[in-house]
Length: 425
Image 1 (cartoon, rainbow, N blue to C red):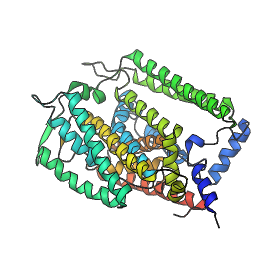
Image 2: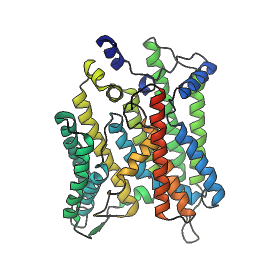
Image 3: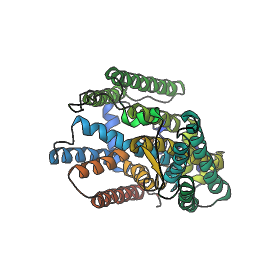
Image 4: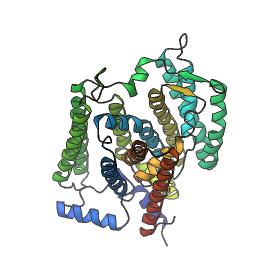
């Protein structure tokens, strides 16, 4: 029988697979040891984003051979802008999925916020920065509402968010009106998804990102050394940075090529790319390198053990829903920037795709396992499926069927992995 002290210790020291900030980096003293430990984790069912990354590579190869337009500069840029709202929405949902909760209302939350934003930025209305703050405040308030009922009252998140999913659609109708549509007026908002950075800015973005990643990695190693924890081979860290640098350089080089027409030149990295990268880096730091992130993983792994360890479970859950809804509004900004308008259906159909993005990427529906980057990978998988099948002339129905099958497969892999680890599903 597990004693209370053992349970408390489990909450204070989550498993390596459950808390990326305590990943056990450095437990293996050489590259060989590091590799063998990784293979051991794979055999134990801790696959992380590996299936999604493998699937992404396979999809790229298949669609590249099936259609010669898939790997063109224009389509790569279109793929990134198409995936951006889904990436951010998937990241938003990671915060609640890690707790073993769900928010089915995230899509219509940004629908309400964007209805307010677009309506009140019409000529004669509010300035767009004021309207944007108002939209974010709406997201924060809705998240606080959900968090109150889930964390304080104990109502299942599925029930609360489903109720809001239905109710907020009515709110959107009251704001916009049946059949009403409002165009996005503010040029800075439209530019996010429809304009590109100067050619030099793409390389500057890559350099800044690499410097930040190197700084965080060195800070992490210094922190581990000062606490007496072993550090892993520095060659592993450098290899990861070199891999990111090569991949980033290829993407920037491709996007800097002219992909316009005879009438209009078009080149450069889309503005939405650095926006999403900033959100990914900040969110990853929050979950991987702070106590708040460790607490989320601990609660998702074992809520009662986390409570006994002194973690304020109620407040962590409450704030996680607030972060989720607020970040969902940011996804809404990217969405309306791309489509150019908001109507009564805005956000209604995307939320399940957001959940799918996180799960396909490797985030567990049962809580306690997954990373923010997994949502990015999963969103890219779904976007590639939609984009590739669209180029091949498949119907929307076929695209939905394939995406649904991928989601079921990802959830099955997660359930089997947990069973292999001896966890109850």
